Length: 367
Image (cartoon, rainbow, N blue to C red; front, top):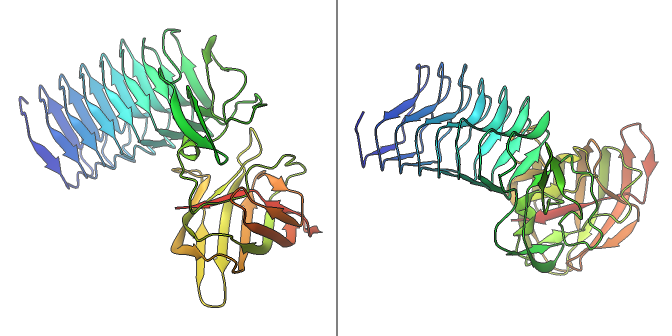
């Protein structure tokens, strides 16, 4: 209690009632702690303001949430992992003017983010709320700003009991989508959005419905894809006609026209599905890099290679990619990508054992 201007860092707080607890404590830094496997919260703040909470792992706390704020204002909650908790990942009540950004809130028993009992004027952006059992985000409060978040594979992506919240940026943002630059307001990515994007700017033509409210400027893809540099990226782009689509194993070759340095692979899903990559291997005669999916956790549309993928211009590399659910398919034997490279299908075997020679996975390789 009444502890100010402290740094609480690099602690292991396991199997307690609460991992880290602050009362009447201000301007503290709480970072790089493991607050997991506790009976209630990983981190709990009551009547504590202007604290910075970052880079903590608050997972598998049994009965409550990864972090819980009560009557606590002007705190910054960023770059934390709040997953597999017994209630919510992030839980605020009577807490105002907090900033919540770049957090992972996945596979929690009830939901990812919960703002209740007059938790107003908070800003929530760049968070991944994935595979929570009930809600991606639940707002029972007013005048909160929610934009550039991903809501994916939750039982219900959103509930809002008040229509004064704002679901898009309040200023126009310059972004890159499919190799072109645009400036516009940006909302959130909802994986159950069924609207169209007829002008191809990455923003849905119609709002996403939120309990009678409107989520304007919905993003057609996860927000990370709007801020990739156009250099050193291999990108097939989306398929103009992705169906028929089925999971299976793709084999083929890539011939880049520039140097590509990548650590991740993104798979374009068919709209409203969980299309993703389960395994990828890229190789030539002298090196090999593989990536394996770890389930519906974290940013599950992207998988990370165990070695950097370095593709040199005008050289040919082999790929094997095993997909799940309904990924986008480019129905050609050869395809010139957005960056001017060439990708070729040598063989695709679908989940039912049928073989095709003109099915290319719609993917992106990037750093």
